[in-house]
Length: 293
Image (cartoon, rainbow, N blue to C red):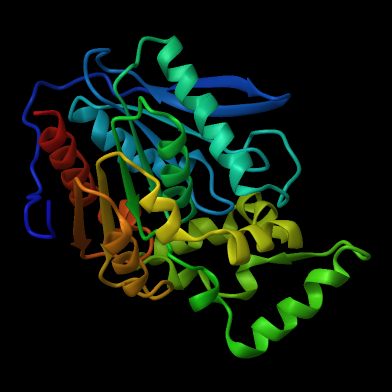
């Protein structure tokens, strides 16, 4: 596949019940909470993976839209996020990938076998990691996922401060909010969504990260290496108006990804599933149709 071979399509099937069911499951002593929209066991199921500090509300518009098109969805809060238990702001990428595998297991236990992963930003990173670890994942969709976070998050002064703070944090534990690095208005073109995110205290608490977690994001994550180890069909989506992450980050992932792969741009910011929900759903459903036909 190349950048030009994936055309957005829209399902025209009959209306379905898109009402969500709240759910809970456990992973290594952590209670994880989520929402399931099961419309047809024979249809594909998309597990939706959130960004840093976000929770299931982030995917409510997209989950509702996909359900009306006959796609099952499961969204959940990682440990330390939303309603789930676990220490706020202290997790590793492996922790979140493991939570995702537990969510996939929950879906399969309830008869949802045709599982695809869709994640934005951090969620895209986790989709790539979990997709590589589960041989039965049918495909991965990663939007606005970074290749190397430090390349755009850390200016030279911030890089110096980070290198000083990292060893000090082993003596004096510290937490630094991601919000110090960028404004919510950089994430979305929609001021209403920016306001809702800003007022959500659950998000604010979950975005105060430990230095352990910053080290995971800034030093451990190597996007091109991770996606090169992924041997599943992968769709990469980039918001054309992303004021937080440069599009070149997605380009690096696309270059390193294995076939079959596709790359699409969308008229949206860093949160395209909120800025352009219908168009984002077009891309997802078009992708599902393409790889399952």
